[in-house]
Structures are given as C-alpha cells and as structure tokens.
Image 1 (cartoon, rainbow, N blue to C red):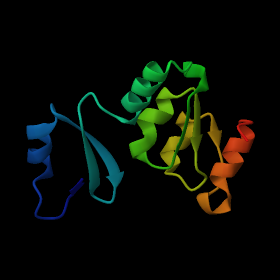
Image 2 (tube, rainbow, N blue to C red):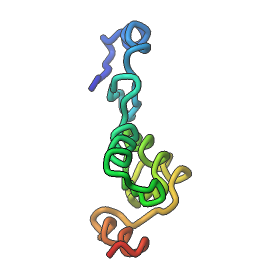
Image 3 (cartoon, rainbow, N blue to C red):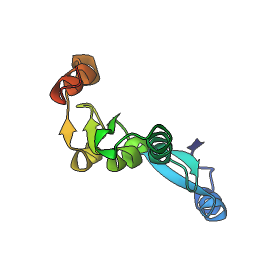
Length: 113
C-alpha cells in the first residue's frame, strides 16, 4: 500500500516501479501495489484450472477498484450496492448494500442459495 501526501514523490516512485508493479488507485491518495502478472483474477484462474471448474461457474463479489480484475474475469460478477460507482459498468449484477443483506441477495439472485 502507498499513501501519498504533500511530501511524496509519487511520480518518481511510480516511474521507478511501474514495470514491476501494477498500481491500483483506491482514491484519496491511496494506492495498492501488486506484482505485475498477479491479481485477484490470476488467483481465480489458478483455482479454476487446478480444480477443473468450468469458467461459466465463476462468481465474484466486490466493492472497490482493487476487485476490478476479478469482476471482469468471472462470468458472474456482482458489485455491492455501496461499491465504488465505477464498478457498476463492469458487472453483471448490482446487489444491495452490504448492510442490507447484499451478499445474501446476490446469492439468491443467482440461485446459489
């Protein structure tokens, strides 16, 4: 994680490490950094290959920009109602807020429970 303040040289840091890390802008001068080639999507891909799961049976539930890779990768992608608004255009379903049974409602929507 990287927190940027008025004394930070974020541009210099970014330029030095951009070939080694992906920078996920979480807003409010906060970034997550992940090694290039790895993401939540690559973890899911590893598991579906290892467990021989059909890609059509993949589900992801997210609420932030750090979830975007898995939401775009999975066949069934769900944004919590209280998510970062930019996720909404990338998902197949928007559920209710986390405090309003969002996960339960999403699982019901997809007939998983």
